[in-house]
Image (cartoon, rainbow over all chains, first blue to last red):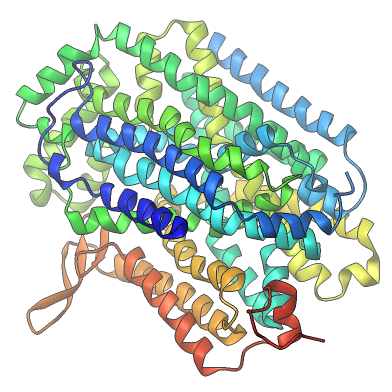
Length: 76
Length: 541
């Protein structure tokens, strides 16, 4: 269930990158100067960061990490 | 004069960091090529981000936005903001884990062991090298151009290129990966600060951005720059494939092995989209706004060249068209804005920030040196025969050799050739990305599938480059039953309306899967070293 939800989250965000609804319009301007196609993708970057935080929280490859760190400390 | 002095102070600081790293380095190949797998999470994040940012990021992004508008941000930045952290999360962490467990220094070492192959690994190294070399040459060119522009032409291109090449070579030579990582961290801090300062200074100088945006919207020739109406959806979708190339670039995949703990990836993948935003948003927005900075003579000349090209382009002789295109190009647009609106001392500091982005060849040179010494010199017996000390010496000698060759080529060759080569290097590395996926996650993949993928990637990229050179004018190259299969567009080659990177990557993946299924998989014992046994599978000896 958790895996399916996270997969859906990733797919949704990839689909949201194709924001055809702002394709031909610069308005509404954010702060009176940022065109819609720019501020949308600014918020998109924030959403991508939040999505990665969710993946780190709920899909971290802990088994790979455990096996690798059991293999020994780096020399330096 | 002040900006030039500040840039030289920056170069001296970078050089010192390299020497400082040398004093802290230990012996051995792992220390020189991977900083002893010792990087903490902050240095790892900042350095990895710096490694991935090149001259194209700041100068190229604003230049592209000057000509194409705000679409530059969603094409190149927000697509990278989602795809690159995802590849780091899924591929980077696993590469790190396998590198730690099996002591790999390069991904090709892992592929050789994982797929039980030798020469196929050498071929993959060769393909990666061919795609990487133009990058290094472009970086040397970028250094010469930037230093010459910042000094107002007092420092000629050939001297600027030499100074930047020598500084980069020195800290890579002495500091290896540790020096490169520390310098990249310093550089990233500089150009992260650069974005916000620049936007405030230039916005103030232009009298605020609101009136500039409103006047662009009222101007029929420029309003499209504030939307994405000039770009087709197929072209736009294709761009999502480009950031897949990032993790396949050797300097990125090798860098994944330098973290001390896997936990270093956590901060990196979460903050990476924000770093992208901090650097790209100002670069793109200022590039677009430059279209209203008509009081800057250099920008006015570019706008006039663009208008002439649009009005009379097809009727002009090819050489005149090319001259106009060069005049209209916006790679120096940020420098022109700074010159006009920033006080001298600030222009110098910001110039140093630009130099930081331009000097991205360090990690690429080191990656090339790592690949040659580990994947070729050590693999073919050099390490056993001559020892590890000579291997590191070979790596350092290679750093010097590559820098000299890149500098000589940068002086003699026309830049346009390498622009095209770099453009297609992204396609090539994106097409190699399935190799990483298969090696890391698909146990049924085989060396023959890997070979098919590598050969296809190299062949397809070469074919596209040849098509682009042969068919210089826009038009249909190949059609079938009224369907335009391959087309020459003003931007390059399109396949069914998509950029070549989309079909080339998908075919690469298809070939890898198809050929792997037709050939024998690696031995169970080999697979046992890489994958946990499936539930119910017989235990391996």
